[in-house]
Length: 265
Image 1 (spheres, rainbow, N blue to C red):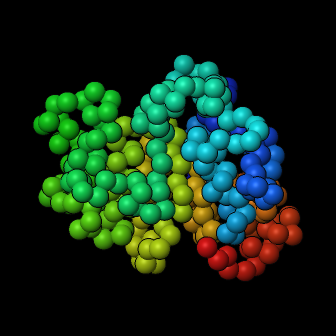
Image 2 (cartoon, rainbow, N blue to C red):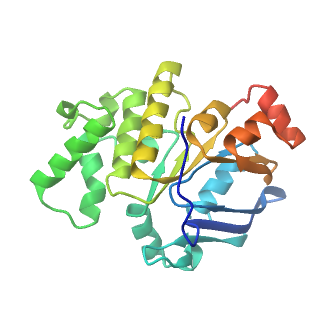
């Protein structure tokens, strides 16, 4: 896979600095810092309990860290601390410039409304009200994620697991976000379904130039999709670098262990 990207921007699209989070006596995140550039796909890997989901939730403003900052580059080019925004500003960001693909598709879809309504809902939140246009856009996005547009009026609960994940992707991408967070997007799917979904994600991230952060325990997912990867252990980032470089020549003993063994979710 060719994973070239343009890193000529003056500032990163996202910058995390010194993120720390504890739950009681347990340090879930310790001094995590990194930058993400527009068009870059970053994988966060590690075994269960390593802190990768805690980091993702802090980055996506779903859980405020105890200390540290997360800055996002607004459309005017300014890096802004997301935790200094108002709740309303963060909600708007989540509906427009950001997407979030959940591990469990039921968490990211409205299961009792149609596939078309799931896709069109984010557009309606931005003020689109023309029914014909909304339906046409929903059909277009169903096609882009390889769902037959004739299923537009079907409920997601009638879809297979793989189709639900593809619908969730369409729901997130319809507003043309600049950054998409993904939490174990292929977990729990059959191997053949996983492969199809990964190929779709690879094509879409390349075609749309999306910046993406993907949490995964599967190193094969990281190798296929990510330009760069972060390895986490016990809440700390222990290694970071270009994906192929980290996987082919791991430096940290923990990364060496991961590469030589099969990670359990």
